[in-house]
Amino acid sequence: MIDVPKSFNLAGRKWCVYFLDQDAAEKQYGGHHDDLDASGLSSSRQAELYIVDRDDEAEEYRRITFWHELVHGMLSTLGRHESTHDEVLVDGLAYMLNEFDKTRRGKTNLD
Image (tube, rainbow, N blue to C red; front, top):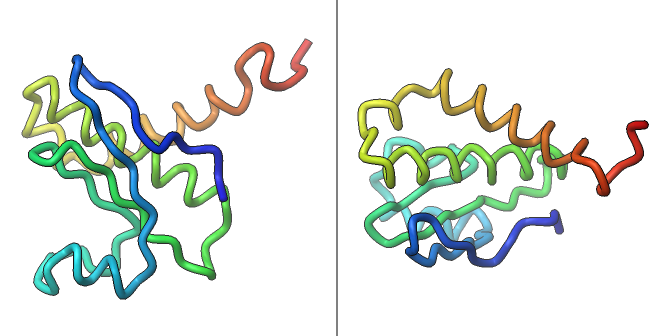
């Protein structure tokens, strides 16, 4: 499993992270969500991130999915609801956060 927190705080509010298999994801999405084939979902109302744990996806992709859903949560928390629908922005920030996390001092040796 990837190094993703089980919970974290955004603006003083506790968020929880859940890994779901495909069947559980379909139940969580209510069977009518537009993105049933998506790899994750952010619910700012419930302060929860859901990551679909598919066997055919690489660990790196799961990690980026976490960052992607976190960015959605951050934008929503900031009241930037229009930006939460900008998937190019959200993906770009997710990939940059992933790179930052992988290469930050003390975690890897870049010197």
